[in-house]
Amino acid sequence: MPGGIQLKNPYLPYPVRIDEIITETEDKNLKSFKFVFLNPDDEKAFSSYMPGQFAELSVAGKGEIPIGIASSPTEKGFVKFTINKVGAVTSHLHNMSVGDTMGIRGPLGRWYSWEEMEGKNVVIVGGGFAFTTLRSSIVYLLHPDNRPRFKDITVVYGARTPGMLLYKDELAAWEKRDDIKMHITVDGTNDPDWKYNTGFVPAIAEKKIASADNAMAIVCGPPVMIKFTQPVLEKLGFPPERIILSLEMRMKCGIGKCGRCNIGEKYVCKDGPFFTLAELKQLPPEY
Ligand SMILES: Cc1cc2nc3c(=O)[nH]c(=O)nc-3n(C[C@H](O)[C@H](O)[C@H](O)COP(=O)(O)OP(=O)(O)OC[C@H]3O[C@@H](n4cnc5c(N)ncnc54)[C@H](O)[C@@H]3O)c2cc1C
Ligand code: FES
Image (cartoon, rainbow, N blue to C red; front, side):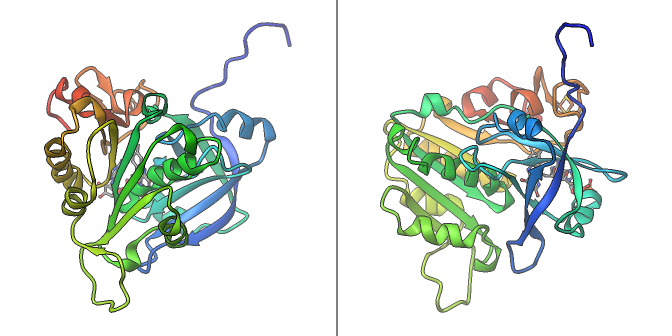
């Protein structure tokens, strides 16, 4: 082949194999998939991702869906996603088996502003399946190479019931550490052995987040959780440029070409999928 720049086709997925499937929730609707890349060069290219980014998962003959990356770049040899069974592609994925092959396109979108968070307290607020990119963030933050770069880490994470919490073994392990403050909550439970909080995420956030001083907050969850958490953070004193909020939008290309996900002049796929509250205040209220 003659010399010159060989550009990768951004629509071409990397082939991957399902290496492990973990059922996360008691209703069996949320499963984590660990994928391994079929080609080492693809793994190398993808492994530049950072917590906060997403990928398009493609199943031949079924379609392509955007899913947040749940693994951390500090975890080598695989990439992990946690998928809620809601419709055509996600249901098909839930019926796939270890050893099956499919495609991953990415990493896509921007990542949380880790450089800006250096030397600051990091507050993470999450609920539902959106906790996936927050899992990626926590694993990244707690890695021995990264932990000294950040000050206090506070996490508020909620699910409807104890059986709906993701990553239960990791939550239990993080609970025991003294370099991260975990505040796990459920909306309600009859479980007499439940030892954590009961109440909605915004109320627990208001009680447990000590201060907005020198802190940045990342909020990722269902729109209703975000709607009620935003004023709590503002009341605690977080300025709009230090509140990062995730947006849920329909997407297709994931690379700012098709116009499916735009809000005003911004593309949620390329300029997001999260924005600071200061950025959102500049956009038309279409989200
Ligand atoms: C940046 C980003 C990250 C995401 N991360 C995750 C993740 O980590 N785990 C996860 O389980 N899901 C995630 N989603 C949502 C996921 O993309 C949709 O659930 C998926 O596309 C549905 O595909 P489907 O073919 O199974 O459903 P469809 O058959 O297309 O639709 C079934 C139902 O899902 C709803 N739906 C479809 N697309 C979306 C969407 N983009 N957002 C919200 N609801 C939708 C429809 O309204 C409908 O009610 C993410 C979405 C975005 C934009
Ligand atoms: S999904 Fe195509 S522009 Fe965002």
